[in-house]
Picture 1 (tube, rainbow, N blue to C red):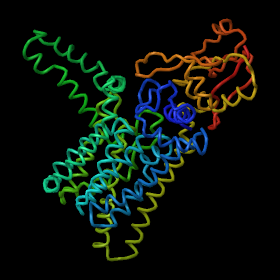
Picture 2: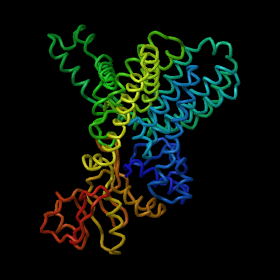
Picture 3: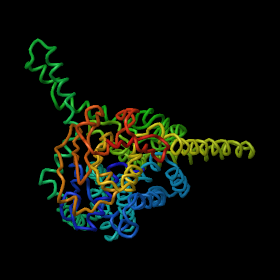
Picture 4: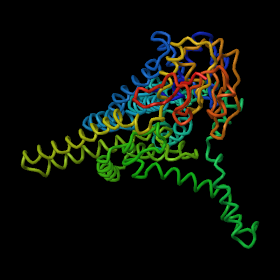
Length: 516
């Protein structure tokens, strides 16, 4: 199943095809207004031809990202080959990325972040190609891919400039002798960024970033007031020097940043947000911890430019996520998986080399290799089991289960009655627009988008015959005469006139439809 954000991508692509405007009537936008979260628009346009040829369905939204996710596996091989003259590193890295929980999870749905990571990898690959052959064509491609990533996902707008800063410092000698070419490419990149800059000037896009940013969290500011209150003089020099917004928000940022390197997040339980995680599974496998330690030890002993670049990427990868009040955040820090996988791959390679040098008995060597391979396979099989069997049951509200079946039922009965649907799922209107394939032109001209809630999102409370609200059955059975009510099991009592129980594809009960 897809999340509401991914369904919004599909419906907005459909709306563009039908009307040349997004769901709210904005013509060919760079950022899509959607829930007033102003999503970067490139993935919408990538999805558009898939919706054109395959129709408005879940596969059309997921397929482009799945293709790019598969290409990332090949891309990491090419990237590692450029970084290190050892094909074994690249082969192992490709295999590790192919079975990585972090990569698989965000490749299967319509997650823009995985697409952005693909473009970041491509940008770095072509820079390394330019480093080797000094051809400006490779430098142009590098700059273009980096810029394209900025049009794809918000987090890339923090990570890519920081990665660029690292490239500038680490490869300064290469940049210095090719300064004229680099200036020309930078001018081209700035030209490509003009539409993006123009959108930020409008304010709506920037306000969304502020809404989820660290400064939207009042906690550090409250802590400033609390700490100053513990001094004899609230506005004294010492109180102001040690307890102020830069210090407390800086500490909050560092705390968020460090959380992305915690073992619990990486190897045990992963993200706290259910749609971003699999039960009892970290962002990486437990065995990856050992490869990571070996790989980091090798990095310390081989601190060349390429190693410094990967370590710098690892350091800055969670920066965008750390600047928000939800941390650790697997989605916003997803690009971390690339340097982590490369380090793990080198760790595995070094371990195998050590075994080959020290173990003289070939049967002992074969036995150890078979054991390690078996453990890796068992980890992967268990992850797949938790993903396919348990995730949808344990996190039954992690995606929009049941809504597709509810929309299908409401269409099948052909009733002209108005329908009140629970808002147990946030922004339920987009789910119905998608699954009903509701004509975009009709919706554009007949809906109201409410203001942002405390999480920075807006919703549409009604369109056509559909209304969306929490349901109090005792109150609503008289308030909504001659309606169909679709609520959760907790909202609808057993004595109600239930005409249909709606089960999701995971076998769970999600809605009960009442003929009021």
